[in-house]
Length: 269
Image: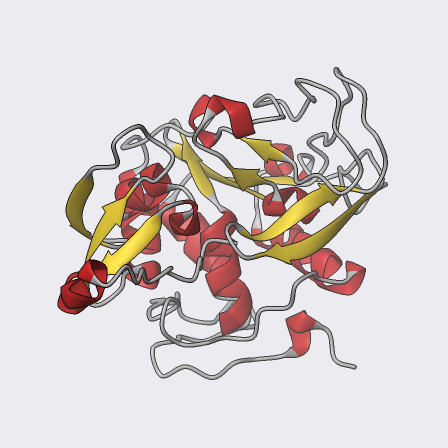
């Protein structure tokens, strides 16, 4: 079976991939392309991403951010599986006492410029370009991405659902089979890396005509707000997982009166 890194999903908007002389890419249509997305990536794919990062970066300090001894920073027994609300997520397969370190930064890639980031993306097949742009996040003036299964640890909005700190330490006892959730707002900084916002919004935006109403059903007295899903990266991150909310298409407002609700597929993980 071919690894995900070897499955090149053709897309007319994709630039060149492969060698360092390839043109920088302009990545589009990730939300609508139905690119191949396995539940879990194998070690060969993670190694491909890590090696590609090392080959792209000129700064030895950036190269040293990635461990040569470990493919992953996951520190616990776990599995990656699909969840109907959050998409792909990380689940404990053993009980984890409060204060357990779940993940450590072994494969944390940093990008300090648009050119640097696009040079890395240009060496990846389209499906992995879209994946990297899902997992990456802004922090200060730079963009970061975990090149291991840590990228599948999902975001939760409400404190009652959050069982990990921003440093991936358990806040309470975790039962086997429980999904690990953290609050991305504890480390993501919005509006601080405009070049990253631009790249990600271009890749993941949905048609502007697809207006939606989002209702947060976990709040007292749900209120609706009109928005377009993933208009930009800032909104994308603030929304977190869209499946944590009930999403209604305004064009199907008649269904609401009949008690029908359209749950949007989470493209996030």
